[in-house]
Image (cartoon, rainbow, N blue to C red; front, side, top):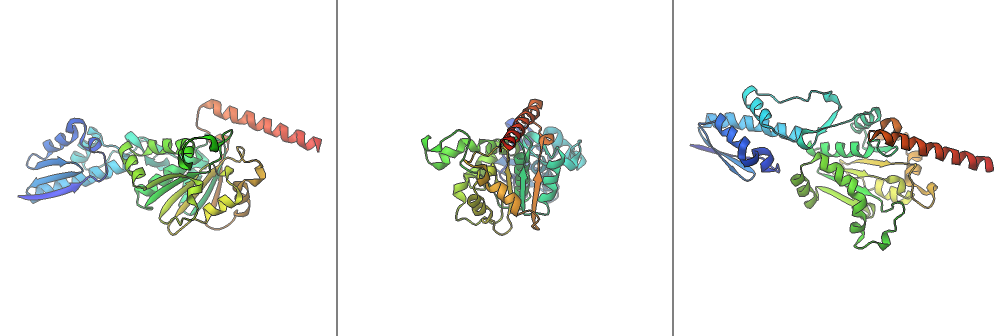
Length: 323
């Protein structure tokens, strides 16, 4: 009798084996000549070498399907075992960045989102600016998760400056990270859409994914990493320069922000505005400007953004007349 052990890696066993081992028991039915034992993250195969080899090929296909789509249903399992191919995404597969939890397709849904995805393939530093709800940060995080899943990078680092409208962080309890964590919640929310809870917990615990305020970036060299700086309009020139010069070997950086939402005392101090101006045209650096046409939240968000833009334009015109 031959024995072989196959690891399912850091996949949650319930996701792969099914509740009450329903999917694993189905697998047993398809290979009655083998003895199959599920032990944590390992499947133990015992029996004739020829049968073991056949099941090992099928298990590789099942694992590949799970890693691609972040799910494995009973229907998927049956089809892969019986027909030897995966269930393909039926809707515009070219727009899919990756498959998130429960097989949810995370797509580039607008022209500028698709542009960001395309430019990420040929540039190591990207700037994405535009209004709230345009998907610039969400798309960037999807690219980071895809790069980690494809082993193009070893870790993801997400950061934000500790400047928020109407808040004085000094009055909040805890250390700097504890004070800033509530403002990092949108980054956690995006990751939670794309990575199963247990795997995300493991990634955070082992620093494969790091979420930290910008101040924690000082003095570091970030190699083999996909690094995203969000809300960069609230960085000063020196802060953004410090961040950009953290780029190490085999790293990709994405900087996102909304130039209409600067919370610094003087808007002219924004490092994002300054960097957008002086880094334009440098090979390897790409700039994508999102607008209200990219907003994919509730339909009212687009109307709200337009209303505020009109008021800001009126204020600027009044200032111009008075000068």
